Amino acid sequence: MEGKVVFENNEIIIRYPQKDDLGEMIGYINTLSLERTFIRFQGEQVTISEEKQYLDNVLSKISDKKEVMLLVFARDKLVGNSSIEMFDKTERHRGLLGISVAKEYRGKGIGKLLINKVFEEAKKELANLKIVTLSVSPINFLAQNLYKKFGFIEYGKLPNGIFRNNKYEDEILMHKEI
Image (cartoon, rainbow, N blue to C red; front, side, top):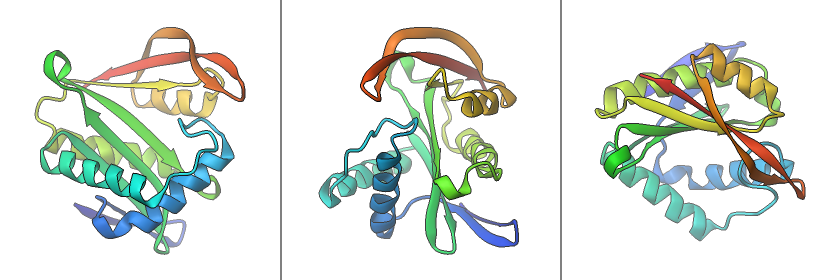
């Protein structure tokens, strides 16, 4: 799947990852990590070998129909990604949603576009998918509102489930049935 759309007079390309995306992926995650926003990385820097192992694992899961991942490029620069990764065994009907957008592209509709596209792909490629789950920070109101617009429902909170900025905060758990 490679989709092209025109977005704010710039060409945005949304597609599956490829082996030669390694350099862009390292730069992207390391930049996001330094922001210390709402992603799992909080300042750590990923090495080439770590990112290569991660990318190889993702490509294998995509090939095995256990994950979909889409990357968003603007002017050949990686500016966002989203994935739904399937659980296994007794939870093989569940997938975990992840999404991130580069700082300079936030608030422009890319997250919304990306969630639409990753769900389209998941419905085609992940045969067992019945429920999608995610977790979000209680102070990430923009993300919570976006998820609610897509039909996600809060089903619980994990007290002290996130450690960020040298303190614990609750983790909001959300789900959506497919």
